[in-house]
Length: 555
Image (cartoon, rainbow, N blue to C red; front, side, top):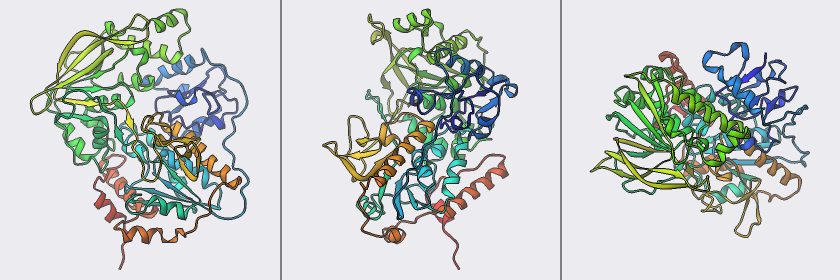
């Protein structure tokens, strides 16, 4: 019986390198690796050796005989991928370290999220390379801690890999340090052979429609940060007194938001959701979440695994009007001919299955509306509704155009989930059109396209706000490899100041750096509180309290 990759797949491809028959695709060498929703195991090639099961950091791979009923559709989803993808044998090599010249090397990484930690993972394999990782928050792990939904505990399992990186003797955390305030970019450049920025995309994109900033209208960035206990959003409140919420967008974050709003509080109480959010959700009156998508089901941005998982939420119906499942002419022709990409075909099939399900009176529900464009948020003093225009496919079969049909949905809560954007970083060039730092394979370039020696980027600030944990691994490895190649090529400037004064420099400017031991104290406190409550952890959300807890006790 074959092994099967299920919903928690993180796409970091650690399973690929241990497969003796190379039956897991796409690999980092395949052109569709960076756009794949998940990795997939070919059931006809898998020899059921279990190597990938043991290697998977998020426990997403299961033997077929161990599948629960809710996971059984993944056997077909895995097989469907190979309907239009061939498999060739042979192992895929992991990135290899080049032979470095003599001498110690020091690297600063700004940002302690997955992209930065994956870059560090490759660098600290060489004992002569020391990595100092800075982050403005008192805690590491970036969006794994503050972005992954609390009911997706398995996905957070990649933290085990990050902990192994942090335990290396040539790695040091400098958390609770804001680069640009406690230490400047030019001071890092003077002290390190390379500076890698992995600062992500913390800001949301806007709709640019009337009354977007009315109370009751917020971004998914704010809402996700609120329920995940991000210190920047811990003090927020959201009005959950109405019976309907509207989520604008159709990516995985939109589905996360919708799912959290309708999941029973007693289920959320077993997760690491922030206590303040859980308390408000316990008194929520929301029974319906409407998810608006500008285009049709074939172009939905959510992954099939997240879409499928909605059907397993206890006490919740997924509602799709069959008339909403309009396809563009190109997709319809490919589907009829059997040439449609298997991932898109699966998405359409799942939507059709949802649309055919009976609805149970009195249950909470997630309602999908496709080809629906928000045009105005309405309300006096706060949100009371949203006006939505119906779209249609134009004569060319692919372009979406507006119709004259506008309806109004009554709601007291509108959450936009239409993507993230990066903002300029002090000391670095910035491309406002692409919302990234211009670069070549991670090497930062100036306005003329020339590489700036010793300066690198990775993650969303490098490539834009696309891709999840798996893509960040490949992205971080590419940037780390660029640094190593530049060392071998003698292309890096030699630091002219010592990094030994970093902590005192930060302290002189009012900073309180938190090292690995300090983070361990925060982590242990959260886990102990979680154990007492039957939860993975109870998150601390106040930065000052975490700073005090992380500080070593002195006589």
